Length: 208
Length: 253
Image 1 (tube, helix red, strand yellow):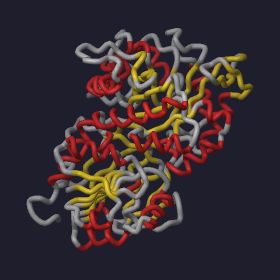
Image 2: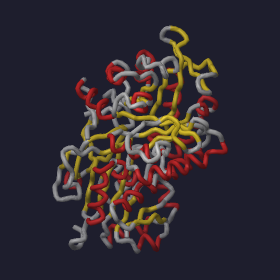
Image 3: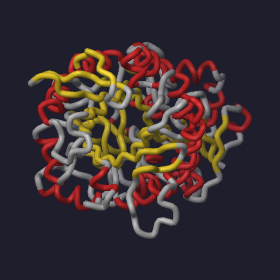
Image 4: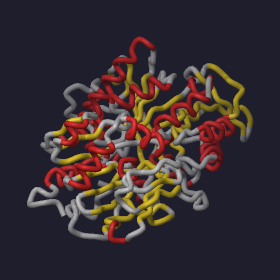
């Protein structure tokens, strides 16, 4: 069972709809016991970094998420803001993130005359094979909507990058924990492949 | 690299599409979900539903529409028409919209944009601006379907709502809307160059070259069209191929 964490932020239905579309059992929950019992966890989220962290802390779910991701090493996927808050913090606000991955979020520079938010279909440059992105075709495009991007301290956490004026980290990974800046749940068949792969991620053995 | 988006816009009234495409094989062309699925298959980059009646009483049908569409379409969905409050935004996002568009309400109370953006993030707050040319190089905002002048300068207003947190501007030229004579390019360029967020050009598309001009001359990040798709004059694929041939990066299926 995939549990999609409900902490009052984001378009949870779309994630659940797509998970069900690929045949996964998926439920939306903000209940600590249900999250603790999940096989896999998706942390969605759109909006302001501080608001997201405030909501997550207010919901009392930080401990159960820490345990699931860090101790039990369950397959964990953060999407958009849900990916950003896996890191230490963001220029968008002063709230600390979950701190699982050594990264900070940075605002896109205004200097490039590019509109911000980065709101469009864009591509990934895969930096590390052997992840759930392996099935992606050269044609694959993903839907991005964000003004801040993830900046990893360690290159080994960078699974894929995307170019928008700057080259930024669009997919991060540390062991069982992954974060994606784009919205797989809004990326048509390309995103569907990712959610399908996430549903199978780690089933061959313990998640690496 | 910067892929321009093509966004078909569907007019909806009481949960039914009143202006849509005559796709072949549609069981029910009036069903927004059927239309959305067809546009998904056709390669549209996003969808926009505009509630043209937008009365308080029919809010529920828009929530239901968002829910049903999101169940079957995995593409970005913007909903506009009659959005007045932060609560309206919340309900539409919860139902399955990815972006919500303010129009008259942002003119009456621009701070509603700030309140909504602070709560949900700029990326899901669109402000739709309907503008008419009042003098060369001067455009004024009209509300209530273009009937009511406001005296507000469109470019200044765009700057102001973006400063308040709008993440995207949907800019419609009331002079051009329905004329098929092309986007109002000076207006589009004036607004696109004035704000740091994406601008969607709307109003006046009659040919595929018009779509190209909206980007190359109007500096728009996305182009919205209704009639040319609705009446089957061109397909999304033709539009994309034409724009790609003109050197505009597109997401091609």
